[in-house]
Image 1 (cartoon, rainbow, N blue to C red):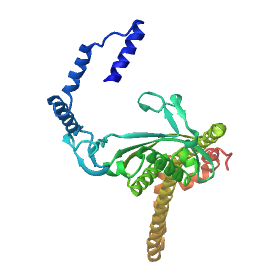
Image 2: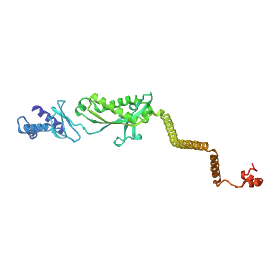
Image 3: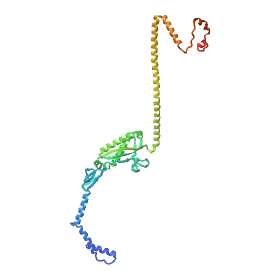
Image 4: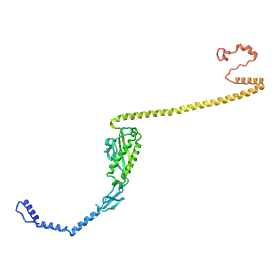
Length: 355
């Protein structure tokens, strides 16, 4: 008390610049009253202590959102998992809780960083990361690969406790898996038709790595955003791609011409073959018919030669006279002898001067 009195006197002397005045006992009495309110065993101390205990006990109340799960730790070690809704755990430092979002699809960008809204890939609005993007193909070419990985928490316990930094682990494993897959493919495949297969192989390999790590992660998708040669040789690759497109176009045009020409040629060949087959059958049948008729005539001729000759003559004359295109003159034997010099031989001979 003497020490407090001396300090008070020195303070007042410095402020007033005069001799020390007597102490303000009212101020001292107010301080003593406040001190008595909180001394041990008083009712005010009990209330404060009870309020602190209630606040400490109430700190164990927590709420788990519908897209989350509660992972309770007791003295830092995993204890249990709780579902959505209000729950209670023993207050810190006895127990603590983490609430990871198990339904959220997390996205990792590799080879680039997007600066647009929502992380949408826009070639003019990204920042390239060459150390991640440049990869070596199976035919020893360098290719720039920019892709994203989407993953989801599969096992909250493994996700929180088995790996130190799950997101960085997925990113490093995804880059390693993509490099391995690209290293097994040629650059033509990576730039053109093999992209889908590369995505599938990388996703499968990345999921195997995560399962070996027991990271509690499910890989949802691996999507190639942009695959192209390094900027130094991109023009040369464009020329190669253009030549490849021209080659494909020429091949397609040749195939179209072939597909148009071959059916026509086959149709014409079928027509010629069918005509020849028909002529063959007709000629064979006609020859067989002529041979059979000749044999019949021969048998009749052997039986009666004169009659057969006469009948053949009459049949021949009937065939000649019945033809309307043949000019005919009928004369008796006497008339033939007298009129022979006057016959129009030039007309009967086709206008060849009597020949």
